Length: 308
Length: 326
Image (cartoon, rainbow over all chains, first blue to last red; front, side):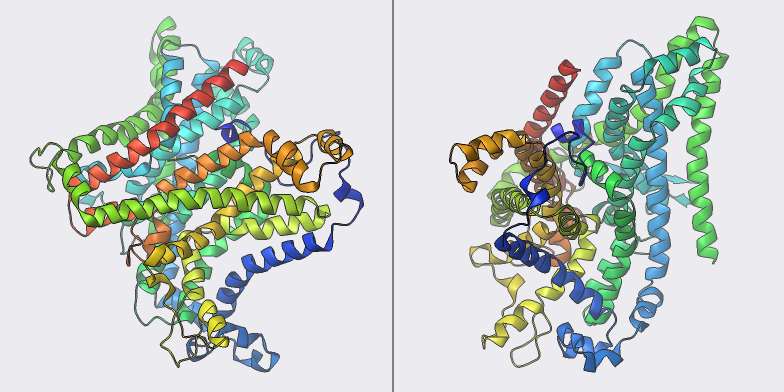
């Protein structure tokens, strides 16, 4: 993908030295403005409806449209009890902890493993290097479905000293490590090969070992690409439903996506007030990450969009 | 509280194990005499990565092909029987057709809408442009489960006579029409189109951001030259801008296509394949967990893999070009 090649696509930075566009000086035609306002309206209205409903009482939410709550006369009826009910009764509080417990190691561990591998692929010479790298790149788009049937069988047999592997956190970490690896190695190597060779060479001359060069020099210098991948992988794992359903399923270790699907959406009779509150709970963390780290987010997403 | 501490311990143990692993691998290499240290070290550095890929991508890939030639319990080989019975069953053919509708409509729509939004916001002042882009882009950050709570509510249906709290039915009720169960309308794949609308809500931001940066890369001189020559806005867009951003258009199209082929969560959470909305990935899940048929499930994955191979070839090709330009 050309998109994986140029991770520097950015929302706002224009090319240096480019001429001013007409849009920089004159105001856009009213029809253009109207069209953009309509598009934004269409994009926002469904989300706003969800947000408003999550603060309404059950009888309000199921008895009248959320837009009636826009009338200032009805502003007295808002409540936060839906969030309490969703967190306590629908067990989304536990699920929130589980989501972090799944997503944080499933982000950190592949970064460490892939960074070591990318270092070897970039700065070390060894037989078979280029072939291995090409195989890794070509596996980038393999859909993760391929692993599910065999690994379910394999996990079912694993029972180490009473610790049931199926349904545990490490079961999903390892899965995400395996399927994040190709992308991470590819991105990291591309980035590391642009680092100034002289710095690494001079570290060699000063007697630094590979291990020290990696931790003290290459890793800190690669921060931008590590951050891009970290955000992409974190959100990918956080938002994942399929892998969590297959390898963890409903129960004590279920993350937010599975819990909202099974405890709220899948239950007949949970009111819209609860379903929407659950939905908002799943969105809070990704939206904070998105707003705070938009620039890295766009880069990581662009690069990772082909991941299997 | 116990839950929190337990979880924290598991996380620390997992991350710690990964750090210790590399420390040990490095120590092993350092124990080797002289030249061997340098020879072996690269392999030890890539060992965990290669092991993860072998165990989680290569081995299961091969095993899946094997399972696809075996019966439901993976106890006996049945040749190509899984494939032939799948293609003979009407249900699976319907699933394939719905998947084809997705493939035909969703990537194209994502590119066209992304292009429209990108072109429009390009004409605004930078501040307004950034706000509009953020609004269209933000759904990209949230999960399909989160989006489903939004869109199930938009499509919700109450019996005729009751108050319609779903946005779409409230609008048509205001005009005096009877409420429609939008996600049950299987004629002409109407329900699938409503799922595609939700998918586009999630996805257009992505294609918009990529196409927008491509449009900004088009030299202004070329557009101005076209204007001087008397081209209309539309002509200069079609003949001057589009050819110069074609590479990005193809990239976005292919990328959304891969996403559509693997699409699971949107359909699973919204309809679970009801009323002819089943696609390959949800059918795979049903075979695996509802019918407990490993053979069918594996065969569906192999079909999916075959569909992805052209993309894989394209990927390697792109990589070769890029390496050659290095």
